[in-house]
Structure formats: C-alpha cells, structure tokens
Length: 632
Image (tube, rainbow, N blue to C red):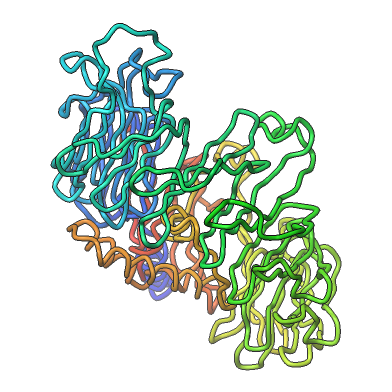
C-alpha cells in the first residue's frame, strides 16, 4: 500500500514537472489591456488604458512603457512589417490629407530599444499626411503641415532612424502666407519617394524634388496627384502612378531632374497590381472589376472581373504587343522569365508570352481553379490546383507526364516532396496522393479521416514519417501510407470559439513574403519547389541577410532572430479543453505525444505564441500577462 502511494505521488510529481507548465514570469502592466501583439522583432506589445508596453522574450519586466498619449486603441497602433518600428497615432484626422484643419500626434518607437525615434510635437509638426520608412536606408520621410509658428506650411522632413536625428527639411509651399483660396494651397497627394540624396514629394499641384541634406528645392514639375512612385535601376528615370477616382490609373514618366520623358501619360484600365521594369519594356498587370467599372464600389459589388496584361515601351509608354493575351480572370501568379512572362489565372489557366508578344506555349494551358503552387522543378514547371496537378515544359506548355493528375475538388490542398522516394505528395484534405516525379503515375497513399469534422490542411515530410495536420488533428504515416499515430484534441466549446476572434489567437511564424513584397514590389521571379518549412527558412535567411546590411543595433538583433532555429520546430500547439479549463497542448510531431500542457484557466483565452524564441504569452488578467516557456 505504501509502495502504491509512493508511486502515485511520484507520478503526480513527474506529471507536474514534465507536462503541466507554470508561468515563467508574470507582467503587471496595470490598467486594462486591450490588445497583445507579437512583432516581427520578437517583442510583445501590450496596449490599453495605460499606453503601450514592450516585453522581450524571457525578460523580467517590460523594457519600455509609452504613456505620453494615455490610452491607446487598437486602430491607433501600426506595426511596420519586418522592421523594429511601431507607429502610434492619435489626434484629429482630416478628411483631406495634408490640410491644416486637424492636429495629429505621431510617434515612431523602436520596440527593441524602446526609444522614441520620432515625435511630431518634438519636431514642430502639426498635421502628418504621409509617414514612410525606407529600407535599407533606414530613413523616415515625413510630409505634412508645420505648426502655427511656421504658418502651417506644407513641408517634408527626413530623419535617421538609427539616431532619431533630422537629416533634412524642405518647405514645399513657397507661397505660404499669401492671400489665396483653399484650392490654391498644395496638399500631399501620395507617398514620397527617397532616392539617394533626393526626396520626391507628390502634391495636388506638382511633384517637388528636394535635397535631403540642405532642404533646398532642386526642381518642381507640373505633374499632379501622383499617389506613388518608383525608379529604374539607374535612378535616372522615375515612374509616377496616378490613381483615378473611377479606379483607373495613369502612368507618368519623368527624369530625376523633373523633365517629362513621355509625350503624354499612359492610361491604364483598372488598378495596377504588378509593375516590372525590364530591359526591353514595362510589364504591367491591372485588375478591372466588372459591374460598376473599376471603382471601389464596383470592386465591392462586382461578382467577377479580370486582369489585363500589357507590355509597354519604356521610352514612349506605347504598347509593344499588337494583341494582349486574354486572361478571363484575375492574375494569381506572375513571373518574369528569361524569354518572356509566365502567368497563372485564379479561375484556372497558365500561359507564357514572349517579350515581343508571341505566345510561347502551343496553346494556353487549361487547369483547375485556384493555383496553389507554381514552381520550378528539375523536370519542368509544377502546378497544383484545387482539382489537378502536373509538371509541364516551360518551353511548350505541354505535360511532361502522360497527362495531368486529376482529383475531385479538394476542400484543402497542401503538398510536399519526398526526396527519398522521388514522389510529390498532394493532400486534398481527404486523401494523400503519391505522384512519381518521373512518370506522373499516381496512387492513393492513404485515405484520411480526421475527427471533429476537420480535413488535413498541411503536410510535411519528416525523418520519422509524413505528418498531416489540421487545427485539432495530427496524423503521421510511414512511406507506405500506414498510420504511425493519430491524435485528436477536441476544440473548446463553440461558444468559446466564437469569442476567440481572428487575430487574437495567433502564432508568429516569421514569414517574410508580404514584407519582402512591400520593399521590392516590382520583383517577380519563379522560385524552386520546396516545402512550406523550407520556404520559411529561406525567407528568414534572406531577411537576415537584408537586416545585416542595415547599420542599427536593432537590426543586428533582428538578424540574430531570423538566423535562429525555431525553438518549437518539432512541435505543434493545439487549443483544447483540459480538465482544469481551456488550454494549450504542445504535441511532438514525431511521436504524437503531449509534452506540455498549459492551462489558461480562461473560457475565452487571448494569447500569442512566439515559435522562434519558444514563449507563449497569455492575457491572464485585465492588466496582467503570463509568459510560459515552450522549450523542452
């Protein structure tokens, strides 16, 4: 009997130490926390009635608190993707950008150091129309109205975000103070553009080019209402985009010295979604929304529409193609190849056009809708849609396999490559198809039946087997399709799930695709096929390389973070109902065993998971955050 009691106590002790997890540290933020948000820099931000607080992984207390603006609402916080910067905005907002009829407060905070790098009121700004961070320069460009002591003039300022010091300033309204109508006052019309020692500022009257260092106006032209700009590789030619009220776009071209380079602007039907400057022309994709035209109202009410693809002369803006390719849908994939442009349509279809407008495929390729994957393989181009998959020749568009692999419309599609067996594995949600990479022969590796009315949404080839997963299920198969394990953790009650809003329960995966696009909007190259995990590692490595070239202590820290191996790469986390309440279980990907349980004791938990550093942050009280270590 004593032996049994001792054994039971030992088991309880082991369970408590090995599975049940207690908070590593608790943070008393005070007040009422409205939102927790994990930044790309790995700093957890908490906003609420006491302002903004920042917490680093493993820290004993917040390393900064920003309380100058008092209570901060969710919509007043902006996180700049793939940077250490957060922008807090408060105050009245004018309905007309750049006007003098409202005050605004803006503060840019480096969340890694906790330092305020820019504050409107400390730098003489009354109203901010545009606030743009440029990388890798690590500069902040501000356009807006100065305070009353400077007669509310429209101006531009340039700030070094490594030091917070102003580097340049220019008055954009030399006629300030003169009697004139409101219509005669210049206002910001779009995003400024930084190019070397020059900054280009678009207004409702013109484009102004100012010297970054001394603030002198270099030139002004008469091009109005530009909303954004980009430049060619030499920096000598500038393209300005004017978005019209009806949803169409006009492209203007001028030199770095302000002279117009086209006889007239180029009119584009629709909103430009892709723009690529190439040695032999300009590739342009625009989206036109049927039903109500190209306007925002048309976009929201239209049931269908299509993309238009054009190839323009860089010297004149005129069409280089006699006949544009038909799309009959929206361009979902767009890649620039050595010999032409390859594109995939969301509604189905792949085509390739040479730079002179000649079709390179023998005929447009018909595919299923929703192209999940288009990527290079040693055999050719692989594509995977909701209903079919194939490898085709990039020269002719013809199948390398005997014919496309077809399957019934999948509720969820994911894929992986099994190098050991030379197979592509496609999960359709209900089954796993194994496709021989050489012949295209297909077999059903396994039929899937997940509990909780779920279907598999991801697939991963691991050393121990093929892992399939959904929100509540994990299943491992061997190379023959035999089940190694299947675990299911029931979801919390429906009432709880309804209360856990999207965006509240999140996992920081450090995916950098969107951020990379924001910094290199005009780069579209076809990548090699790889798993989601490999893509994430590649993206993180590219981000780390970019960060390492920026002279800043904070970017050095971000370089370290993105070079690091994910602390939880061998585990998945599932929200479920535990004996003591709703909680999170950490499940090993190779064994299916639960290695840790975190009881959140909350019917509607709000939490963030940092998979890189291995921490879970739980809003455990109105002003309290509990941090749990997820490391083994």
